[in-house]
Amino acid sequence: MTSHRTDLRSIARRAMIERGLLPDFSPAAMAELARIQTSATDQTSGLRDLRKLLWASIDNDDSQDLDQLTVATPRPDRSVTILVAIADVDALVAKDSALDAHARHNTTSVYTSGDIFPMLPEKLSTDLTSLGEGQDRLAVVVEFVVAEDGAVLGSSLFRALVRNHAKLAYNSMAAWLAGTAPAPERVTAVSGLDTQLRLQDQVAQQLKARRHQQGALSLETIEPRAVFDGDMLTALKVEQKNRAKELIEDFMIAANQATAAYLKSKGVPSFRRILRSPDRWQRIIEMAARWGEALPGEPNAQALEAFLVTRREADPLRFPDLSLAIVKLIGRGEYVLDQSRDGAPEHFGLAVKGYTHSTAPNRRFPDLITQRLLKAALAGAPTPYRPDELEYLAGHCTEKEDDAERVERQLRKSAAALLLEPRIGERFDAIVTGASDKRTWVRLLEPPVEGKLATGANGVDVGDTVRVELVSTNVERGYIDFARVAS
Image (cartoon, rainbow, N blue to C red; front, side, top):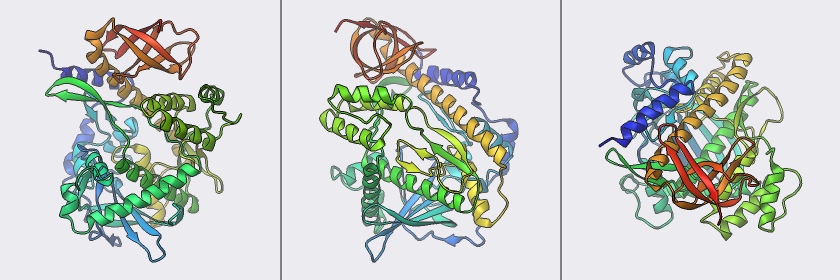
């Protein structure tokens, strides 16, 4: 019997190469790696020792490349100090080294159903530069104070030595925070950690509420994950948002804003992560009108957020499909170089200004670039990147991120094609998720699969619901073709 996992791994490697991504590390990079035997905890001169704080990580159940730890301290005025520790990857991966050259080329880890292609070798990303439980590690710490209304009152950044006291997972943490399951074993094993984590959850919800009041969008897209029984693919499972994921998400947004603000205060040119105001706002207006909602004539995040909240409450089952359609119409995020002293480019979807990527340096090269800029600024050292170099890298990272997303999307489709192969000729309900002069895309409501509307695309647009028949699949290319049929 053929192995689905082996087939998908071969497809993933080919897709990486076709997109100009490197699936393997060079001999020079592996030689460098072999010379790295220990973490960089001998480089502690002048660093704060924060190992006794109740740091913990919250990530996917199977994640070993841990980039962040968090901890909270209550203050007398009912505000709370939040500290986010970010793995000091730069301590072991030097700029312009062979390991850095690989990371700079791919710019991101690529996660597929066939294989994971890490930006840095696993000896680093899941061990020596990972904030693993029970390990002393170097970190860049972002400290910020959050008021009861979710306002960030101030922030500071510094380097420190930290220790992860509990490796926690999103799903079990979320169930505990929601009151539907007992505390995870590591929470009860570490004295005081339960109180600590509930405080973090409270602050994260305050941050979230304030962002959404200011127009952050409640988007909830579907990204199915392949489920295997041994080496055979058995299902596609949709990962749901939950309270533990929101905790990390909201702390990372605040930490990224604080990092951007610090670099700006030092006059250091740096990356910004932006999402421009949507070009297809008129189509978003038309979609909202279908449900009797009137959006203003110009892009307005607060009005769009109010519409999204209403639709989620009215139809939670189909909300992710509407959300995906809105995401496609808003457009993609990108990296830009910001050298301004005053205003900063805005991220439309997050309703924040001055936002960068800094909290995942094991997985994303822009975060490693930002870390180097930050460490140089903290030390009063020269900036390690020239402005023209940063300008080039901003475009390069955007381009390679798009390539990586295409590889991941193609592998999701290859996995979906494997599941759908026996179902050619069946009919399904679907929603249009992308429409252009060249091609139209639809997503099935169940199973959660996207494919091309090969015939019958005339007159449909993003957000329309249609009835389709599965006409063909191509596992190797990740192609799934549908034909529109009468309802």
